[in-house]
Length: 474
Image (cartoon, rainbow, N blue to C red; front, side, top):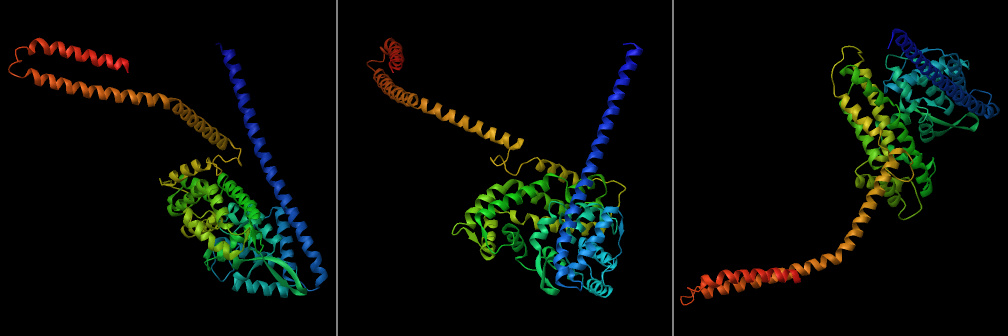
């Protein structure tokens, strides 16, 4: 190959490499544009919802109500999102809360301080929230906007704030699930009802101040806040719950990201106990979800086609003991685990230098293995490559077993004939042994001893030939 050809090939390779780089950049830009578009769409839907809430309120009362003040704060936050401004927060709360609630509380107070509403009412709310942040409540539009603020990375409290971007409560795919499950109706001035989620309900999920907090949460989620849950409703909502959790474990999430980061960074960042619990939750979900659904459907609706919270609570304890897992509690368990890990990071600090070896690599490998395992495990409901492969293997195994059974059915009569022949052979061998013994005893007599040499060898040959002939006949 001459120099001209080499230069030509090198130029082609450089051109291809340049095209690939341009393609990667284009894909990244497209992805960013898609994210920005989704955020704008989410913001527009929140604004429309907020406007719908404002109309009846304005008619009901001239003085500002709680929901009206919340809508003003929501509008202020929406402007910040559109302008992509960074909110810098300082702690003004007089009570220590879990990290994410601490940041949320300060963010809401920041919004109230910049609210254009009546100052006396707003200042009273701020004073109340500072002294007791568990009294803070949020409307649906405010809650969604706060989640969007964190996902857009427009809030800075400290160096751990960036991890709230992927925190379970603020994720786009779980934000509505939490609100629709936790909300309560609150009456404001003018007898106006509004759906509100309070810090108290969220904190109860973490502290488990009541034994049945998680049970009530799951029942509300599956029954869609109805007093009773039917069998059809349970099957529909459980399948949606399974799909959401499967999507959570398949894609990026807070714990997975921190496990991957802890492999590269310091031991300060990693925590064996939390990683172990996450791995156990993920493994349990992947391994037993479909078996649990069959068992739960059978136990829950054995006597009737619907059940209330008390019946659900009694049966869920029984099922979890029998199955040795807590599939239905996976969402609150993960919520608690992520909150604990954020608190762990805040308490221990983050030092991103001096890489050291730790056991996080093991967890990362195990998580990657479990990510590739489909929760449906070959069931007909799923058509992914893993399930298709499992179904092919199962069908192949069934076909193999079928062929074995057919072969055994054909071999059966031959086996019976063979057993008969074996019995005849054993019977003849026994007879020959008896005859041989008798002859030997006869020729040992003193009067016949001299004739033994002439007869024993021919007789032995005759007996042997006779045995061979008898076997042939058989």
